[in-house]
Image (cartoon, rainbow, N blue to C red; front, top):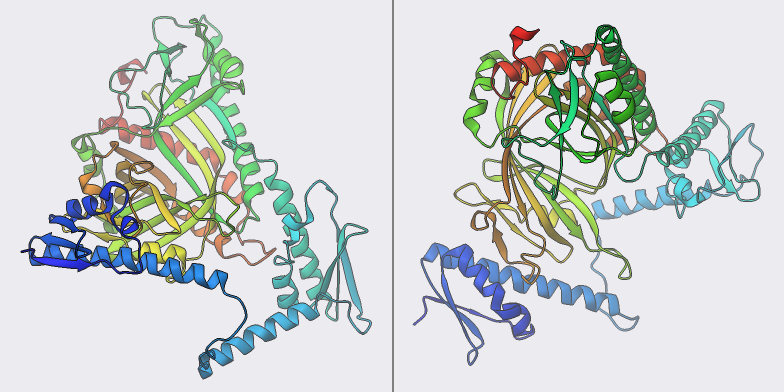
Length: 572
């Protein structure tokens, strides 16, 4: 006799419940430590195991059945035609007031779309110079970007297709000025975004001025270097050639490399920040330490002086690279670095346990393709804590700096992403609130009809305060590629990552300023056409002290034996 049975609902196809080759039953067996058998005669799943494990298994079977049931209701609703039906449930007073407020806003927005019935004293217009940009990208398919401006400024506003401009009229001069300024910002946001290179954004390669003169060659990587987990194929690194010193006089030219680097970095950061300044998106600026892996480079086996390498090779736009952020796979190698920080520098509740989950989302329209989204999820006391969901992640800027004196490199990156709704009952929320941790603190997730996981990165972070405003993160990364492994598993079946071998385990170090995050946080909450309070010049103007601080921290990494120096300090 089985210890427990689960009856398959008669309105659901048995093959859908069990999955292809009974993969759902196999997965639930593995995740709950139970044994199961399908009884075709009785139409039930028979199970053996402990009471706790059986309860977990039944919960998963119920989730599968509920997902199919919800999908059936959704499909019936989509096919529903007008006819006899039950009367709708009466709204509560709170719901009625909410509906009335929404209708009033919509009515006000609709009225402001039209020409005013009376002459108003103030007017303005903004002409869109670039006719190649579709007007829907600027004002929205149905004026959804203009509507908030109309309501908030109480101005009449409409698009004049004949003159390719937006006209604004109102009874308050300041409101009209604000409205037309916000329309201008909508245009500039789209216009500037078109300048960002599509694939990787703006990419720069530079070299730190060495403290003693030497030449550089492109060489094979050392055995200890761990490339990016998804880098497949051949790559090289930059390597100093100590025994080939430049001739007398070259050293003066070397001193110009750093001053040129400062100017190039200032210009690059300023251009990137001016571009994203008006974005109503998340913005992140980070500095990671590791190694530059050259993936497309000149085949010349010669060695170059620093100035020639900088001018002829690193500035060539054909040069391509990936950045290896893994400093070690052994935590013991980072203990000296952690000991460098005093107790006063340890961030409050320093140990953070987070997950970065990439997934594909079902499109709203059936004729569209699935699109990628990313979740950042943290747990507090075993329950869902802070979480976020974004899409359309973009690399805006990447500066790769080779620091051959230290045997390592650093990369500064600026990235943006569009926030998604974090409504608990929306598609993202339904997926997130089904996440849980196993008793061993491993992630357990469940795919839904709308969200299918493609990869998971588990992060264990320790944060430290350094100098005035810098935050240092020491992070353990563990990566799983879930794409293709669980495609045939029905939504509702729990997948325990602990049972899947991880693709990669690594440790990395990140540096950034708290003020960067504080400034950029305003962009994610901008209303249509608004501008944040920070200015690009405020950040780009501090490049020289930032580079000095990066070099100071490279010394810390070297003294802590986290990175291997190519040159002994006694050579300086």
